[in-house]
Image 1 (cartoon, rainbow, N blue to C red):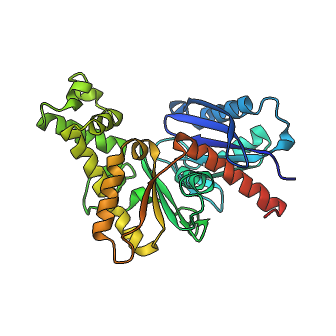
Image 2 (image 1 turned 180 degrees about the horizontal axis):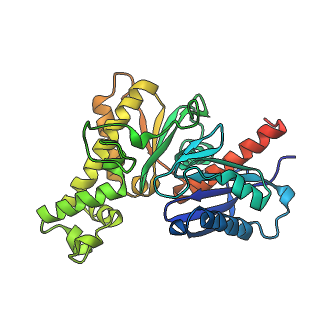
Length: 324
């Protein structure tokens, strides 16, 4: 039986989004709630259960293929285990088992960059592409790599960590503990640090004005608004983000020769300057024959993770049932 719906969950450091999703990707019901990360892993499981219960009210269990969950974590996909997680207390926690024991549906977990890439592949900007790289810019930097029409997870499922390419030897410390990773230049915390320094140098910048003169109130979203409005200091900060993103992607373009780069996440989708600068860096530095690669903005926005997690659940269900 080709079940009509799957449940997709996008679990982030600040919020959990859940959706009841049709096979063609339409989210027919959805809910969002704050992630109770300070209360521990079992509170996060409780929140997931509450969200799923809400969106499945009145739907017969036989109509649901299963649950897919995208987590901001290193996932051993073969073992379906959480190996490492920076922003949530989930390392070593059997999230799959805990959720499945409470909800009685089959559960599949994956890295949230992978689920976003799945969503864009099935229903968004990468639909019809067989070889592409997805990069998500937000609180962290994640992504996924598609090769030959399939998500490339690597030997254990840890592949696709675009945000943890080293692009500056002995560069700034990354939240993962490494140094000089793309995430240490292109995620929200890095943008805020750079913007505070820029606001001190450019005293007439709208960064300070928008923050009411309080450096502690500067956010990445405020910087992006200022950059989009033409503020010189903010544009300089976001140009650096785009340059560093392009610098990291040049290596991947040379190695993998993808058809396109898909830029998503809250930062990537709201600041066109970032994609333009990354595309320019790739065009200038990639090897011959690769410089015409398309740099596209993701289309699904905040729905990419939910839709992709649901696609993961459909894939798992169809594999078990022998459906192609």
